[in-house]
Each structure stands twice: as structure tokens, then as C-alpha cells.
Image (cartoon, helix red, strand yellow):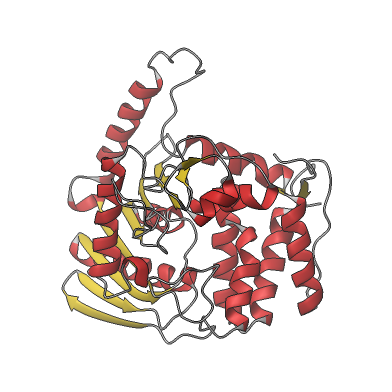
Length: 362
């Protein structure tokens, strides 16, 4: 955790965030949805997609680049297929509506795919994939993003970091939750490093001249690299096809940059798939098989330098459990930005503490 970080109670941080978006024109329901999405990211330790995004979300709303009161349109184009027009609404609002449609269609038909267009940055992809878990379904969520990554062998940004997420329920064990960018690192992590004047690891990015760099500021002016070279690049392209091309949203460089382009909308696209476990086998049997697999994986001997075998979602779940007790740690830069927004909108910012809170609610 960076020096100067302070802790904020989870419930109060969520209430503050929702109040900000209500003040910016969102309905109370939509504001609460956006706040839940951002707070979920912070709880799970993905600060690059948490409340650090509130100031830029607010700026785009103020400039009229995002519609605070969208009229979402859902067109069912097949028995288990739908397309959602987000009407340039907030990403969390559009994404949650599209995922709800996918869950409903999967409940009726066993499996469903829903594409969404005319959206905006929607936070962490796992926020949507995990929504399937309460319905004993497997969920997948994909989204394209503003160009930041060069395709394999290139030096010019065309693809976004194009994240994907998947969530599968289990029984006695926690669900498996995958959430990953197709780049070596999320662009938000590099942006935070640049704001703090911190270096980034080698192999994350190229500068504007196409040379490797550990300077976060130079990386922001250059391109992020795909993970695993051509494999990550190919996977990012697949996400672009499903989220951008197939949905009817913008593709590649046509996707607007959230942080640098204030003369156009983002027109981000999303893609969701939901599988109803019960249509494949009894839910209890599936969860039992999942538990057996997880137990076998966990029973494996850890490699040198590791204390245990970790599965997708383990670290994030443990982080969330801890932060619900201790509060969310925020850097002084983020606290300052949120404080400025608080003053400008007349929404009181919650108290902060230099030490972890006793129960996350102080």
C-alpha cells in the first residue's frame, strides 16, 4: 500500500459514491449500481477500477459525454440471444441490465448470449460474471476498451486491454472467479503508477518510440504489451470481435478514450454468456464435482516460494473479506481528488483513518 494511504469505512464510501452520482443526475437506483460496482473493485483489491474512477466518471457526465438517464433498449433477436442498446449510459448500468437479460434467457433456455453496444467503461468484468452465481449459473463477461495495446509485432495501439471474466459456482468451496486483462497489466495500474511517480515492471509496456520502458508516464504515451506475446494478442482480438464487432459498438481506435478524448463518446461494447448448470446436470452434482476438483487442486504441494496453491479469485476474496472489516485503503492522491469533488458537489466525504478500522464501519 502506498505511503500516505488512509482507510475509509466500506458502507460510508459506497454511500458517498452513490450520492455523488445522484448529484450528477443519475437515478438513485442507477447511482447505487455504479457505486456497488466501483466498491466491489476496491474491496477485491483492484483499485485501478474502484473509486479512483469517480472523478473521471463525473467529468464525462458533466461534459455531456455520458447519458445519466439512458433509455436502455433490449431486442431479443433469438430464443436465447439479445442485443442491448445502452443509449450511452453508465457502464455499470448497461452491463448489469445486459447480464440480467442473459441470466433470464439462460433460465428459460439453458444458455444465452447477450451483446451490448453504446456503453461506457464498466469497471471490473468479474462484477458481471459473479452475478450469475446466485442463479446457479456460470457467467462470462467480456468488454473492449479504448486502444492501449499494440497487436503482436506492432507498436501502435489498436486493441484495448480487453478484459474477460468468468465465474463458476461451487458447493462447500468458494466459487472460481477469473478476472484478467489480455495485456500484461491493466492500463489502470499503469495510470496509478504514473500518478504516484512510481516505476512499472519491465515487460509491461513500450514508450512512444516503441522501446521497452519502466517509466509509467512514458508507458501511458506508448502502448501496453499483451500477456504471453501472440497468445494474449490473439485473445484480445477475440474479445474485440465479440464485444465490438458483433455487438455493433466501436472497434479498435474508434473506441473513445475515457481519459484523453472529451470530444466524443466511448461507444464501448460488452458481451455476456450465461450457462444454466441445471441444464447440464443436477446442480448438487455439479457443485460436488467442483468441490472435489478444488480440493484436489488445493491438496497439491506448493512450489518453492509459494505457501499454497491459489485458484482464480482466492486472493481477491480474501482481500474483500479483510477490507470489509478494516475499511478500504485509499491513497492520498485519490482522497484529495474525491475531496475536491466532494466540495464541488456539496456531498460530504466520509471520515478517514490512518489505521485499519476495527470493523469497517467506523
